[in-house]
Amino acid sequence: MSSILSRWLGQPDRTGSDDAAAAPPRLRVLMVCMGNICRSPTAEAVLRAHLVQAGLDQDVAVDSAGTHAYHLGSPPDARSREAGQQRGYALGHLRARKVQPQDYADFDLLLAMDWDNLALLEEGCPSDLRPRLRRLTEFIPADHALAGAPVVPDPYYGGPAGFEHVLDLIEAASQGLVPHLQARLAGLPPRASSSAPD
Image (cartoon, rainbow, N blue to C red):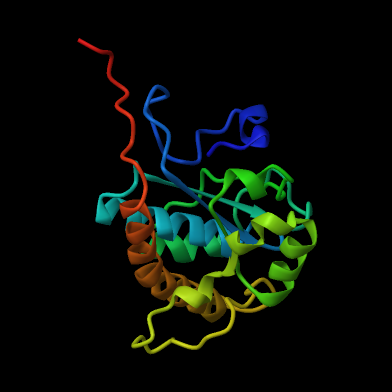
């Protein structure tokens, strides 16, 4: 889903869709960290790549945002871009934005990178939409070596190893998140055809 800020800045649609007339996605996922320049844009790019591999990229839209407005309109941190690029993930086109009140209704899952950002999401979330809020690491499969990791830690003040660890955790979580999304999609109506009737 393209944010208002992205449109103001003339940035490309963050969903990666080239077809403006395409049927809307059936599920929407928002990755959330503090400033939307390290963890959450990385998570956006990683999940999007996993969805493409699973053939679900037309059914599930992915975006990211921050709980704070520190870096509005900025690209992801250069260290995040470099670490992601080394593993085949493109982050350079993304731009930071802040979580908006409408996001709680627009997204089916809002996945916080840590407890603090989850708490901030909870503060702004209508009570009936609270079940949409989770931590990303909850989706790491139980048999994965990183299972039980409570959070994706902020790598901002550390070295390159921290950014690699962020990628490890996000990739692990994506392995469990994709099947979760597949199961949810199975219970939803199919996407409407975007083609004109005969």
